[in-house]
Length: 79
Image (cartoon, rainbow, N blue to C red; front, top):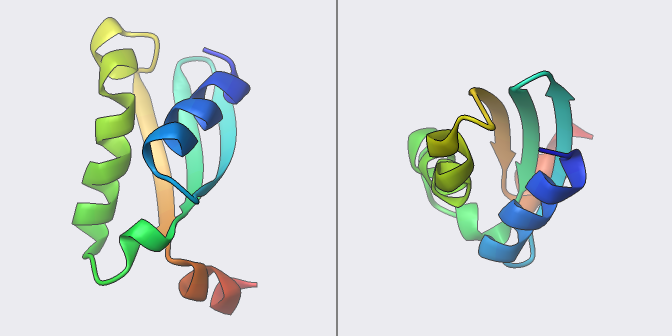
């Protein structure tokens, strides 16, 4: 998969999100910033992102995903 495809896939299912994608073979690195993450644990945030990629993971086009997830406020604090 191309980075643009992964970005579009996540952004379409997590409205108002901002996604940065890095790819190394079938390994994907993501930074996802979304207001949908407000009040959720780190595990719940990751589960939401995995759900957007489940078909690609099941098909084998994505083998491994490393992600960092942030609310907009958490992202501002990181900058």
